[in-house]
Amino acid sequence: MFLVESVAGFLADSTALKADALDFLGDAATYAATLLVIGKPLKTRSLIALLKGLSLGAMAIFVLGFTLYRVFVTGEPEPFTMGAIGFLALAANMVSVLLLMKYRDGDSNVRSVWLCSRNDAIGNVAVIIAGAGVFATGTVWPDILVAFIIAGLFMHSSVNITVQALKEHKGVKV
Image (tube, rainbow, N blue to C red; front, side, top):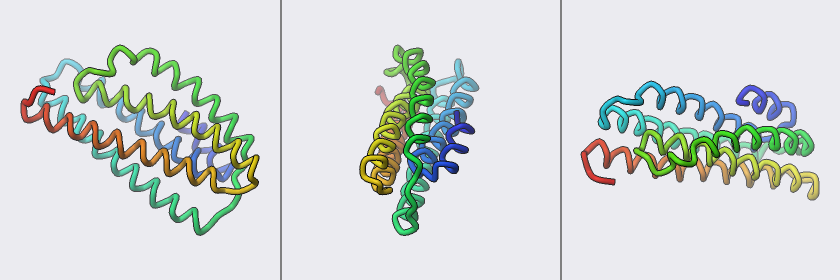
């Protein structure tokens, strides 16, 4: 889905689709790291979760910067591509969300996977809404707004994961 959304984001000239594609890439790395440390001591899992939290923060800053740049170099994205790819991505993410639902309150490492999947589903709905907004208004602003919202989701999850991982690493009950 990262590749599909990346290509569609560039073809549709959509910042929101590009931000969501970056989220898919981050999720793939998160899932791989999580699987790598399953069964390892909590300190090891919390360090990996801390890295994931910090990388989400870096992604948020990147998306915010790119979106601010886009505010000044605007072009209207293609709303039908945004909506169609948003629906496809939402279907893929809902499968992950449903599979991971029972793990949403686990340790920071497992919880980070849940948060990434949840963020993806929210981001997909937001991209669909942005596509409708671009179509309805004929402007780039719904796309820009959704990219900011996705960056905010990244940052919110980054803070949650990082705080929980630091507590776990210090041996504090969460």
